[in-house]
Image 1 (cartoon, one colour):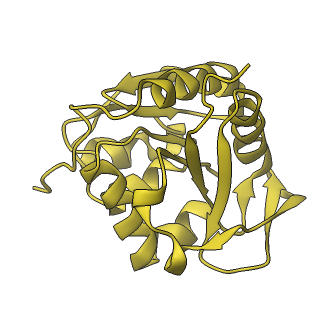
Image 2 (cartoon, helix red, strand yellow):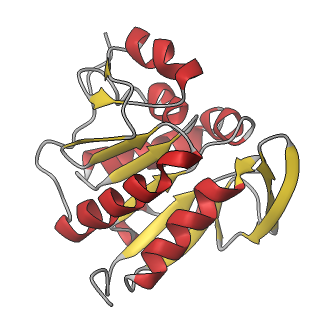
Length: 190
């Protein structure tokens, strides 16, 4: 299959990503013909986790300092406990994410990944979900939160946990196929 042929997707991650939440979307997108680049705050490899245990690592294709949002057709942000915390503290990551929203690109985040979107101030007024522990944070940032396996809002795809990956992967493929979304915009922070 090649629904996503000629589409280039950035998976933005750092050490501490949840292994399944990076590798499962990566494989699903590759199966549909997408070109994937792993973007991180450092070069070399980043290490994943399976919950609290060390997991597989993956090679970084490009440091965020050298990534230009204009080169991509969509963005995926996996969860994990440490990954989003590292990403949200990096100004270049936040600028990259804001750039994706400004260009109306589809963006997908799972589990703790939406914390990066909170820091980027792009969640206000958006329908979203995330890991149970961060749902109050999403609400406090102005998102309309629902505890569902996957929520799609004008190109923004969010899910709660690894169990939601089949639904998440299906929806990210659909949204990346559709391309830019008029309703995908940077929220105005309160």
